Length: 292
Ligand code: FE
Ligand code: FE
Ligand code: ZN
Image (cartoon, rainbow, N blue to C red; front, side, top):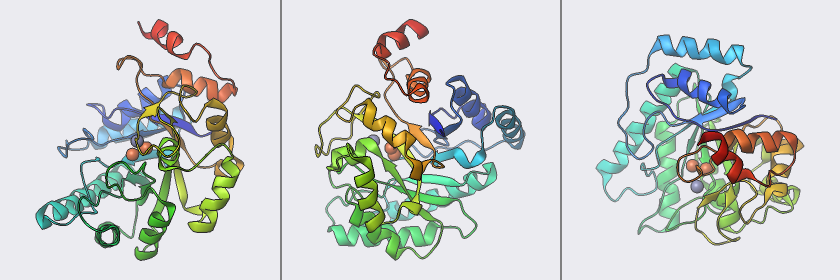
């Protein structure tokens, strides 16, 4: 199982992220190159990069299972303020350069929000921006399926398909997020049926990352609030089915579940239950006991 979680990217950069992931028993991880809510970025160190590569090798972590996530404040969908739109494009270009430097193959990007624009105009803006951003040496940009909060684009598979059709590169793919899919109205209880639908519209081969999260809200709620595995409306068994799906076995599964009491990372315990294939009935208490 290729399983990991969201980790921090602090002073130790990729080395720190890899160490944190290893401490949770993960063999994959996802990080933001800085705070997700801003675009202030520190210079990357080659020394720390080399140390990270060595650490990863010693801990059976492969670079192809390391994912970068672009900050969520950038919006490729709306160009009402041309300067802001250009800033988003320039910033993402720099993110790709940072990924290239680190040797990262995949960067997850939220398609963006229409905010006042017609859906089709917004989708065209996204495709146009991506055509300006994508580097023909990679990394691949993965569009994340969204919950449909506000005017978010990409909560309907056909919208993702529309963008992919208008981007002229092989360096474009998809990241599916189980919480977002649930909140967008896609029932994951029969995950194979969902995958078949996905395959018909987009193609399973386009999926290069799975965000594995339970949801605090019911199917079709358009809310986007992640929940710990087994404690939400999707449920442990369905999430385990996704994690074990044969067709996605080479795709990293990344947990973005909430910290317990906003303090304690749940990942060590959630990864452990997924590996064992058994729901931890005392998840929250075990996490609190371990970290307190
Ligand atoms: Fe995301
Ligand atoms: Fe996500
Ligand atoms: Zn989310």
